Amino acid sequence: MISRSTHEDEALGADTAITAALATPTDGDGRALQRARAFAEPLLSGETLDTGEPVLDHADAVAQILSRIGGTPDLQACVYLVYASPFLAHPREVIAKAFGEAFADVAIETNKLIQLQRQARQRGAPADAAASALDAAQTENVRKMLLAFSRDLRVVLLRLASRLQTLRYHAAVKRLPERSLAAESLQVFAPLANRLGIWQLKWELEDLAFRFLEPDTYKHIAGLLDEKRVERETHVEHVRQRLERELAALGLSAQVQGRPKHIYSIVKKMRGKSLDFDQVYDLRALRVIVGSVDDCYRVLAWVHAHFSPAPDEFDDYIAKPKPNGYQSLHT
Image 1 (cartoon, rainbow, N blue to C red):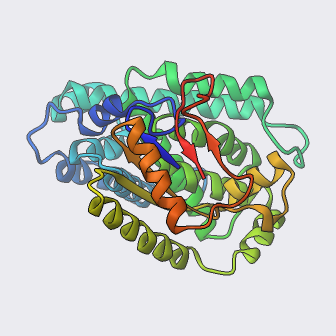
Image 2 (spheres, rainbow, N blue to C red; image 1 turned 30 degrees about the horizontal axis):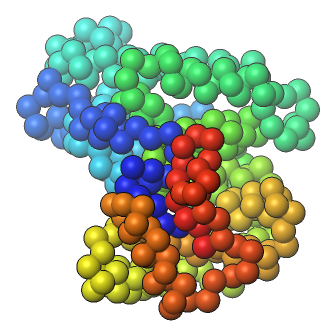
């Protein structure tokens, strides 16, 4: 995919807001992360979540996920305060006194959202254990809750990271989560991560949730992918670097991103377009972002001169933009 920088993806986009959310809050002194973990550890030791995961282990893993997507130590500190809150008699007062009002706000709001989501999932859980998805109206309620209930995106980021860790835990211990939790992860949490542009969370939420919802299909597609993910990622990175060098030599300022297509995305494309596996051509993909429309077409010319384009697999969304304004070249 080749696009100019004002339309990097079909996601609705919230780069500035996400950057701000990852960087804040702080009423703190720069040592909040260490202090928060030390504060929470005696409260959480020996405690487990309803999934069976030790609470402190979960909090440590969520903090690591936030760190990986650029969350500051202050935001990571909020994780420990969120999980410590239920064990405090007066959580807002105690946390505000020890860490400041900003940390207390995030901890209390996140806990409120956790409780509301749990109640909504219990009310919306299908009576038939074999049911394949949440009721559409219930799904929409949970989605609106995530977006509208919280005062800021910090709470949403904490919930996304926590949900990913919950799915990782179930995968690690080889235990199926509640079907409603997996469906909610696929239908609400992953699209929200996509909407916010956090693609490294999106693809993992999708693959893990789909693995639990349709294990046979997941295993079948995984078997058809004859390379392990790390090998595909290595290959994509090699090609990405080559393309970046070649475009720079042409005087083109381009950002080149690469990714192997993940399993849920493959299945979604196969079903959406009624394709067999061998008809899915973009198991690996590159995205090139340049500064102007003219540069888009210059990159396209170079790519088609050095790689063989697949017949009937070219779309010009610059000449004919999508209704939402999305513009790029797909080849």
